[in-house]
Image 1 (cartoon, rainbow, N blue to C red):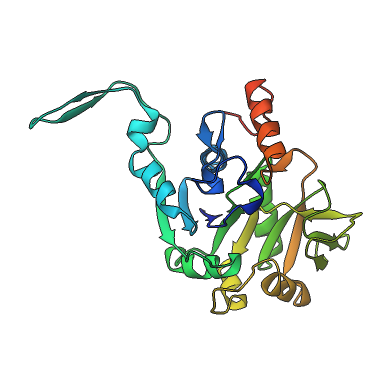
Image 2: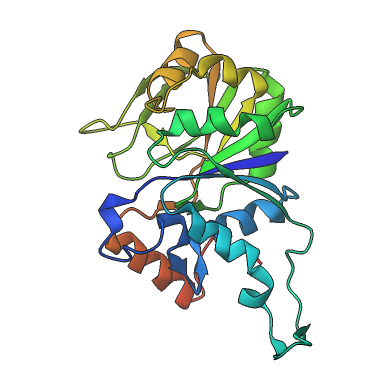
Length: 260
């Protein structure tokens, strides 16, 4: 399956870490958190990516356009016979990356809709945010999604209650979704979605379409959203504290998502 990653937000809560790059490019262990997310999906065989760009998207383009130089040792000969010889290799040579401009100020739903042209022909695709990592079992998540036949599966996790709360019945069908409640006793949306192509029936035009509001509530109303419960590690990078925590885990060799 292709993996669509939302990379266009302005990251206003983490500008004290880096104001000159988009949040997905903030480094963890020397590589952008976006790279960590892509690397994790690739471990499960999902190596075709659609990056939904927006705020400072050119920084992301530049990183991947110059990926060989960023990740390999090389010798450069200058002058008219300019030549570059690479001495080392990397494990990402089979990645396919589509960098899609989805609007400088577009909201999440609009970004997914505008990236749809690069997801045509896909009966199902993976969708996530470009600022969070976890040790979600992607294979089991996909198997669960394919087993129930509904339009979307969302990964339900149990971190702090500042995110969208998910309530579900015993079968896993989502019965209620509340965006960023003040207090929560249930699971919250951790992203790591799997979507059928019918998701685009819930996405109307306009920059202001927020995926986590109208579309997700519409899916709940129609009984078309299921939750995959994940009790393992999951952590977004919203603040400097999150940034320091993730880098600390990586430095100590205790990052649960770094399985490569």
